[in-house]
Image (cartoon, rainbow, N blue to C red; front, side, top):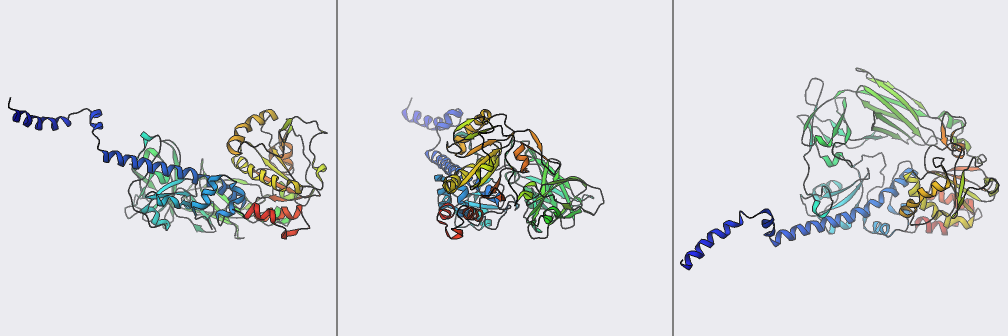
Length: 545
């Protein structure tokens, strides 16, 4: 055959064969450019993940601080000194994180930005943002503009999930479409849709979206859900200007679907909160919160510290439960039924003072029914005449920490107490951790603390005494409540952790919080001659980072 014909035939057939190669063979023909792009995408994802791992370490310190400050976030990251510890990643946080939490509260909208990684802006097309619901979202340039962050290149790529290298997805799921209508089926325009509806002194927070002229609102799956498998459900709340409201349960399986949501006329559920028991003790009610439950969900809340302790919810007919509480009080639960056509329902709360508030200014109750002790590494059941007694600690300032291994904030705050011990023990501070009676023995408690010590406490043992409470469920005197353990009940503890400060004469001073103000009070009690001027240790402990 003529060589020219062979070359001609080959020129036709060989390129054509490429189109019928097996998938495996075609994969091998992938261009170097494609491989480089994929490698760049994976490298960017790795950078984002590493950033998120560091940024997430702000969550627990922020929550602990807010719990100690009536739901308020710190004005700056430096105020977290007592909560951060010495971890190198925390130093990274101080150097690389832009903090947005000043003036924010736990009751703000769950998607409110609290902090973001400013260093990530120099490496990728966006940044990781820590939100009020403790989730971390990678936010692109278009979304960053809404947060007041500019100067980055816009990109449509967004990480949906990050698994192994082979499981990286760069696609967005379809939105859930809600068509909001009234009882006659007419579209409701301007209805705000919320995952939570949090109020603070009548300041409404932003929602997930607003219905358009057709009554439609489009919700991204990632904005509705934080965690969970496909099929998980959440309850949404909608409120329109025309005084219509409604609740709707949706699931991940609803992505891509259009759902009709009928709203109903609202009932104004409202009331006032007071504490006559605190009044008699001449102690102010400083802050209150009311949670509204609908079945297993808690879609609404209202907190106040203005001095006008009131709440208001606009809700459709149905069965609800209100959960009200405040500073130095016990909580009160109340079931509520709102009937069709009912326009208003008032229900007021008189919050009972907690047991601890009645102990302030009085001798601290002695330890009772203690099962055993852990004292600086030595463990065992101690005979009664060997055990620690508060009456034997006169002349020392005592800090009782009521806690449990099962309590996340208790475990997370223990290193903070270890630092307090190291800082002030030589000055006369005695810290005693009182574990509730949920554990049967010291041996069992040690077993439960083994992994906690390694994971959360850097391998350190608790350097101060730990008492394991006993006596079973014990009635809290003067109430219809009980607690797990006789000593826990003697102090009326119903929330964990709770710290109680006792002076050198054995008198209960206050419920202690690890705030700069309480640290300064502690110093004055330890060194009364120094008063507020001697702050060399307090400066290093509170203000140094």
